[in-house]
Length: 335
Ligand code: SF4
Ligand code: SF4
Image (cartoon, rainbow, N blue to C red; front, top):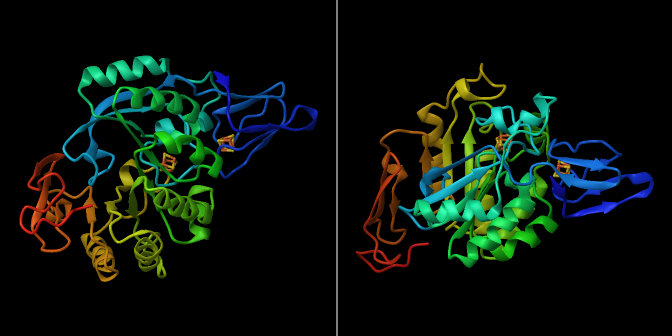
């Protein structure tokens, strides 16, 4: 537990948390929506600081990050907790723990120095703040990120994108890459299935792109949820027109069996993946990838100019054919 960053003291020992776009106002002894920050007598405390629930060495492709340090390992850490409550969540046992249990904050105490040492020993080239939502353990992530850069390790966030602008400004100097979920392109869907709004996420995507952080986007294709109306077309247009055709778009397959509250929704049919892929192509996106699908050539990276194979991927194994990011065939610089 540590005093939080990014909060304001209000009258009568109330506080306003400025870490994410919920901007919770908390009376003494109250917890925020995330269940990870608590008003203790007018001081906002981060309960998740240094309380890791898991850490492991993963292929960077598992984040998924495909166009940054391909073929390397990333030391991945998480605490419990999340500021959203997505019905589709696949890590709900840890992301929703603080909302489903009335118990002391779980996890094993770890220092930022220990995280860096273990990452170095593991041979990783980066640290990923992932599995749950790094925003809710931002203070601990930030301490790790500073140390990581001192040791030439890159920092990667895997996020829902609902952090505040103030949070982004704090982490930006140390953030090398980020994958953000774009779950829907419909505010009502975001409100109903995740408990948040769409616009702050779009604003953050634009901000990150403008500040040249390596950005990738993941969309979980939930049948009859993600594909209703023009959502997929609007997403692809947003990426192409407001960000860049070079921002990778990961189209991920949904599995009801591991979802938090969607056991009766069907798994993503291949036809929906094909449809979304074609929409991305029609809007000119250069890097569209399919996820949670076995043996599919659309996991590979191809040169956007000549179509030559640049990176082959299978079961998180990668084979790189590009030369220092240049296409072997036409020398085009691949994002
Ligand atoms: S991080 Fe977000 S959800 Fe948690 S207390 Fe702060 S504003 Fe509320
Ligand atoms: S899917 Fe991501 S953002 Fe949603 S509840 Fe799970 S961890 Fe949080």
